[in-house]
Image (cartoon, rainbow, N blue to C red; front, side):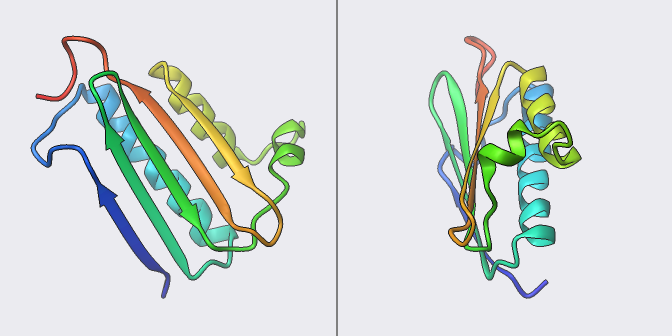
Length: 121
């Protein structure tokens, strides 16, 4: 695609979580990056992943064209990718938020809970 990417992975590289959490993490990042590649006309995508004892926190940022997030999210015709991302996070007790404005790029923030006793191994 010619788009530069940067990954900042802060959890221990050997950390493992439940299958459901790992799948949601992978698919959430995949959807956010795919949306940036397809729709943002960006030149850079940054992915930041942090973890603590209670949650995984992910930010996917692009320097693209952006969009009016509040308008798109209120719309009855919400794009399938955004709806899918919201549903995927909700299915594991997580959340997603979008910060975007026309001309200012987009940040997608994902939060995935790490159940006590079922966190990183």
